[in-house]
Image (cartoon, rainbow, N blue to C red; front, top):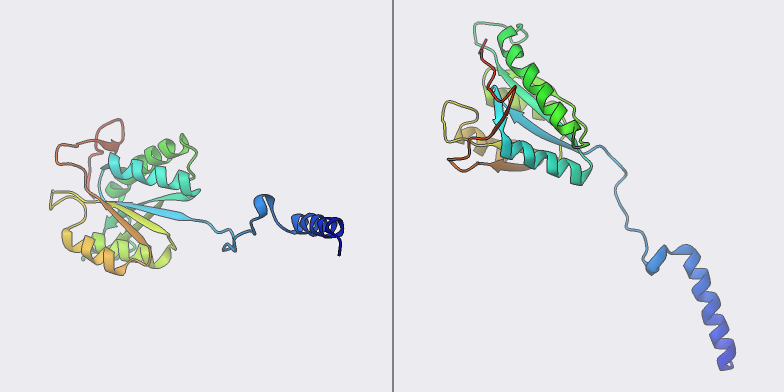
Length: 188
């Protein structure tokens, strides 16, 4: 074979391979089929940590995921689990609306939920059992009466079939996402 023939064959092979390979000669990565990615943001009160909310929105935007704020309502033992909880709903719905508006302003889709249980952990257990999520972002607090207890957070780390991100703002960081800058009153 002459050098000219080798060059022509190499050029032809290169052109032929160019039709099968994407630019830069790389083969496409085998990726999992497109699926909906979801980030759960559970909360329990009339406000939510601004740090946790901002982190969830940033991750959802980067990952092209849907933000799933999830209000966890507690139902007293003397009531059936399906009982209406008008005061908790009057707390949850306005805050879910604020979260949805703020996330939508940053082009992040939102799919809000309300789950009930006998405790916050029980409600979160129900949510995790029924909702496939890729990540759970939860805010820890130094106030033992507000939100999740340390035991709840340890349980979440072992029970969730998803990535778990626990954020605890600095003790001096009081920034919250709430309705009109104020927590919504009411409990039941």
